[in-house]
Length: 349
Image 1 (cartoon, one colour):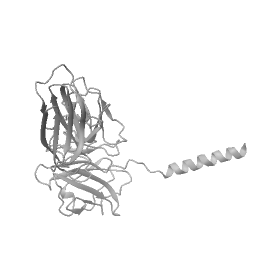
Image 2 (cartoon, rainbow, N blue to C red; image 1 turned 120 degrees about the vertical axis):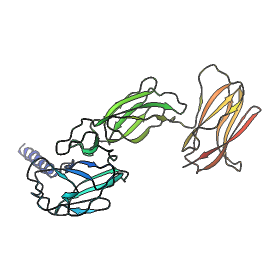
Image 3 (cartoon, rainbow, N blue to C red; image 1 turned 90 degrees about the vertical axis):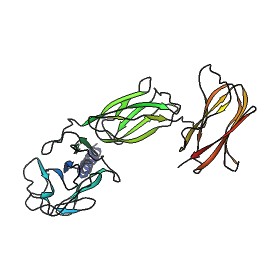
Image 4 (spheres, rainbow, N blue to C red; image 1 turned 30 degrees about the horizontal axis):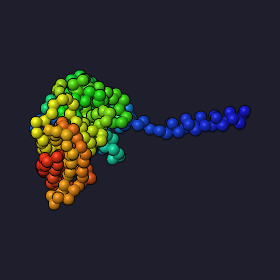
């Protein structure tokens, strides 16, 4: 019993020691807010949040952009709690920022990386560039939290006032029909604590409000392939985002419901065209017929046979997945009874 007790105590001590070595996974946000001028890239304001473990001054600290590196002027104090507003006059040399996208990096006097913001049209962008009168703000409760605020709070704590927008749209299939059993998911990353889940209405429409940040919209529905896209939600505005889902089994035959029988045989132009990788081909059968629908190279060599069976009269959608063929022009040809027709399509990857 005593040995067991001592063993448990040693494990507990080891666990405490290990936990004490694990750093806070959320890095402090020294850069709290950024406001850019409309035209002049050297007219900007960067708000730095004062942390208790910062140096007493910013002597030796410096900041970089994609084009410049500049050291802070001497004797900028960091002893008072709150914020420091940095402008071009706070630096010892010229410092410009691209209004269309840049990378701002902050270093301390030991050349140690302290913080970074990537905005606009740059690799691994964390937020879109703000519009005139807006600013980029940090969210301390989020490890990757940057959002755009329409009412800047330079010199004060950031808030979410005027910092949310609306996303609205329709989830539909490749035929334009609403998909009401879909689930629309919005989050910044897999670890986002406040992911939004929306079920569209019966007509496929969905809408939700969100902090104006950069995030992923994912849409999933039974029997359909999941769709995801990166979007920027803007303050006090509506982002219209219609989402088209393709069938999970793309190479299939889907007959339109209803009693309407086409007056004549037909082969419609595929849609979309050009496409990558899935397209829809619509055929009309005026009567029951042995039907063949083939994809051919320009030299007539068969690439894929989408239909080779007897079909009853009606209108059908056939989906072709061209992910396994190279880009180029192909033919698609139908034979239904005595009816034959051939059209061209373009795979563009």
